[in-house]
Image (cartoon, rainbow, N blue to C red; front, side, top):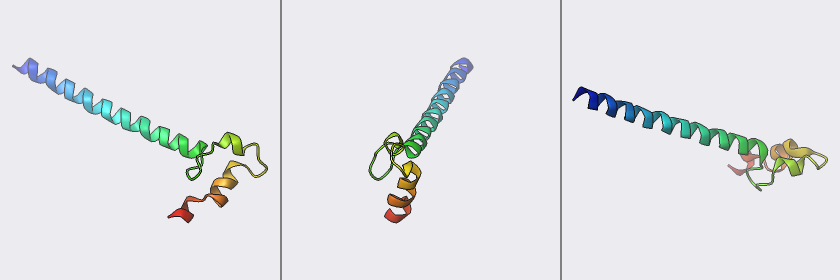
Length: 69
């Protein structure tokens, strides 16, 4: 009986650890998207790097998130 409880606890612990790992992966993906794509228009930073002012100017001045809140 104790062996079954230990196995079930290990299974539940594995599910919890896996869920937190998945949440961490999702947060990293969102962070990467925020750093490489404009949140407002969705255009990637690689396009803006070919323009004179660049991606940072676009996201800080033209499409600043604070202006949309």
